[in-house]
Image: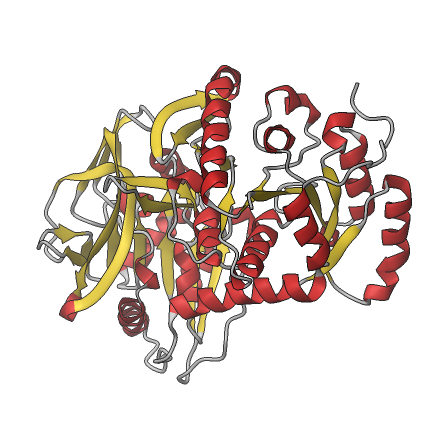
Amino acid sequence: MSGGLLVAGTTSDAGKSVVTAGICRWLHRRGVRVAPFKAQNMSNNSAVVVGPDGRGGEIGRAQAMQAAACGLPADVRFNPVLLKPGSDHSSQVVVLGEAVDRVDAGNFRSLKTRLAATVFETFDQLRSEYDVVVCEGAGSPAEINLRDTDFVNLGLARHGRLPTVVVGDIDRGGVFAALFGTVALLDKADQDLVAGFVVNKFRGDRGLLQPGIDMLERVTGRPTYGVLPWHLDLWLDAEDSLAYGTTLGRPAAPHGAEWLDVAVVRLPRISNATDAEALATEPGVRVRLTIEPADVAAADLVVLPGSKSTVDDLRWLRETGLAGVVARRAAAGRPVLGICGGYQMLARAIHDDVESGRGTVAGLGLLPTEITFEQRKTVTLAAGTAEGGVPVRGYEIHHGYVSAGAPAVPLMTYADGRPEGARDGAVFGTHWHGAFESDEFRRWFLVESARLAGRSGFTPAPGTVFADVRERTLDLLGDLVEEHLDTDALWRLVEAGPPAGLPFVPPGAP
């Protein structure tokens, strides 16, 4: 077969990514050869994929997670267009894994025709190779101001004759109006592809929801395929840092006598905030994203995460007073970690004529290095060892490079013997994302941070395996789909395409 399905949403963060992953895992467990697809993603949370030619490429982190749900290695074709916002007005454009342009809202429109051709060609390739391609939309299909150039939502559905399921987040309120309005704003050709709905993040008595579901079907002629419950364990691999609350996950009780509090600074242009998720899987480690100086001052460990705009976010650190708090922590010997852009901020100086165009600016001066931004971009997997031969793996995505200064102690060493990152007392830095998914390295780093923070009673749990935590999450998604959605009806959609004779919901787009 050559089936497909589009999972659209009433809004961003309605749950499209997790519903897509859940459907992928359900199909995979049935023995179906299934692949994920998101035509265009806008996210600074990205993963590195190595293609058949050996070159590294970027895709959205959520699509890497969906690939795992399908039992597949990630492929750049699963997310052919990735937009990485560097400011409120411009984004880097990544096409089939490679950064090719930087655009603003005005000139992006002129690029869309070429991008659409790439997207449709890539989708057609996947559809010829797999039994089913489960596609994730972006934002809302009812963004009627953008419909004429859309290739992500119903533009893709029209190209592939994809039955479309619209997901609504009831936790936001107004879900029935949002689901109805999404259909009612579409023209007839688009409405003919919208087969029904899924209600997401429901808490409470399912019976109380039924009158609304019944009325929605009466006024749209389309069924609701199920109601997915709110579940606290679904927090890994968020597509955007705004999807996080204040505290990551559900911190389990400590294995030892004390907790370890970690404050991750929520930078305005934060990227790969998912680096902190692996820390949050450890019992006794409480990880919070914050912009509050008091939180940063009080934490046992502070993390400056990646940034898509290092120099601008460094200026924000200074304007908010957070830079001073971080400096005082370092002076007192209390641990600070910088990852990628956060690592670059810790340098003595940053020379940037590429990303921000601001030339040379002073860094925080907490590591004896200088950073220079270059046009070439490193996108690669990485492997090596840390102190004591501890194995560690990660991936790199950056334009900035250490151009001067030689740290006395590198944080890691590549497999070929080259040094990576830096350590100066209680200040650590690395360009490697994903390093804390290496279990032994994560435990080593947390023990060292606890020692520096004076938390002698903190002991990491020996049995936490990050890969197992992610796999349990994917299985949970598959379980929720099987238990709460009408999978027989979903299978009919995948197999037969959009139902015939769906009624038109006025007023529709002209």
